[in-house]
Image (cartoon, rainbow, N blue to C red; front, side, top):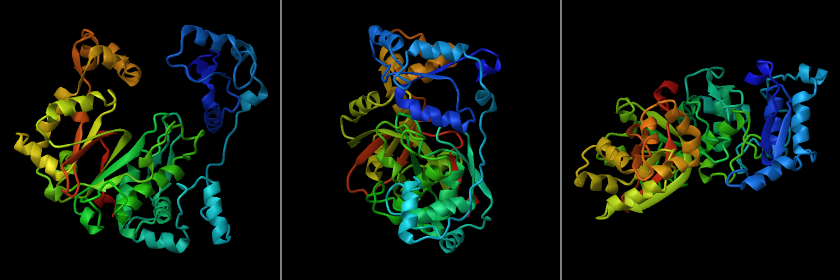
Length: 436
């Protein structure tokens, strides 16, 4: 866009697997005739001769010579269709036309409004009952969402969140938690090719008020509130951000099981440390929810046993060097770390930051470090700039202390812990009480 605005012709080049997505984004931005050219997928780790073959060969989408597409795209004058573009009516009807229950359910499936599990149809009566869970008016704006940074934001209201809560099977008393999660602007259905998913942790009195599980099976499908709130967040991020359709608005190659439900409560009463929302600046008596983007990698273990230090170092070395860890541990594990001298959660986080290290050559060879961190290092931003000066065999830190989180949950049947990729923004712990 910057080149075009400066009067410099440009042609966007993509791999062919993104052809549908490229067309969808161009159309959504009112530029359906944007000049594009395509090469085969993949590009990473291909030899120089393979890549030259892409350039000298045919565009796999148009089946015309690739360089011909590029040259014509740069030199052909704009047409009336190019200059006119396209615009859309953004409003949507509040109600569907009446139909049978079977037909409506099929419509929801055909329209990609579900997670392909059965949903409760959101009738006016059911949505009105759901709205009893909050004192806020139906038309109050909750926030804005989009699947990726290059798509437009969609704004949505309390009533629209309530519709998705009904579909997921939530009870009215769950609605303030879901509204807080939706207001974060963090999508649980990212369009990233790396299959991100959302994770949410609930703290404070609301956990017990609505019967959330923070004991045995806290991360699994054994509790109505945990399961339906997580599911509802994913439905909100399917329907209120512009879609989550494979090949169109979702490009996660493998997908993610957490996209069905990944919401749980912290076991504050059995933890020896301050809860997550207190670490984020909330009072212990307040109710809050923290949302994370991640969920790609998972590492697990038991302990802390005698060899816990070497085990943890190996685990961190196997994590993505750019994507921070969310450490989830049973109360048995947390108390075990206290016995080993970690009186506070901050002390354990500090140890983790100091011991999550990689040789500089491996750190800088990581794809996401190259893409997202190296530009900061070149620009002189610390601590990345210092890492860039390290010798190949020097050990460099993968994460900063501020990027690592610890949550205590579980039923104390085993000293189990799990590390899940979970990066949170500075404002991603949200008050639930504000949405009651």
